[in-house]
Length: 226
Ligand code: ATP
Ligand code: MG
Image (tube, rainbow, N blue to C red; front, side, top):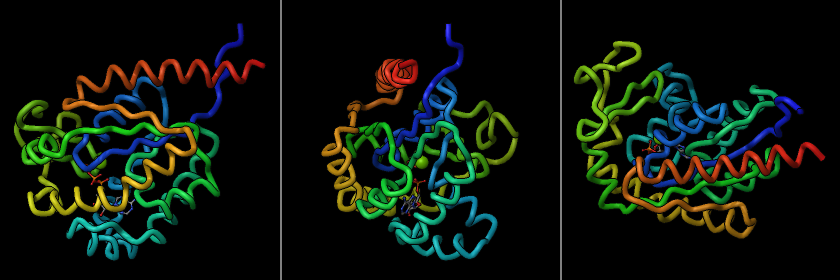
């Protein structure tokens, strides 16, 4: 029996802000052993470290606008190239068709998972969201609270409410998503790479995503046996 022969999987997860991308991504990487690349976490890392890219990006993230494609593409492709030959899951990138085209030129992906959650549910959910900035771990006071309020379970460090999680900014981010990221879904649909998961709750969507990925991974790795 061949042991660990499996093909490298390059996947994207797309969904509106607060659609559960971060939570589902962390479950995917845990169960399927992929590397998680979150553009938002990367940007917040750059902002915390006050790098040039970070200071530049903050002007946009604070307003709920997208960071210019050029900055994003450079940041993400650098990170992907530094990983070497491993499976990865991109979360939060690409968010414009221009980014998708640039990614395709240099790193074509195998699959795109889209999370479709109603906007009313999202707006409600983000109100209770608390984030551990260094890791990107998220909690929700309503349905996924930390063991101690305001404290990260893993590190014991403080949790914060993100500057861009204020209700007006959330509305702006959802509009940006409709305008700039929806066309990315069309782009991947036309390439027959898109699978959509619809629902209100992460715990309802997750089993379906896991099921789908399990069958995909088998298909992908069996290609390698030939
Ligand atoms: P959530 O974390 O709830 O999924 P989100 O997807 O809006 O919400 P992040 O992915 O953390 O949040 O991104 C935060 C901000 O960083 C975005 O509002 C945007 O300003 C910027 N950003 C992240 N990824 C990109 C990208 N690919 N292109 C342009 N800007 C980006
Ligand atoms: Mg996120």
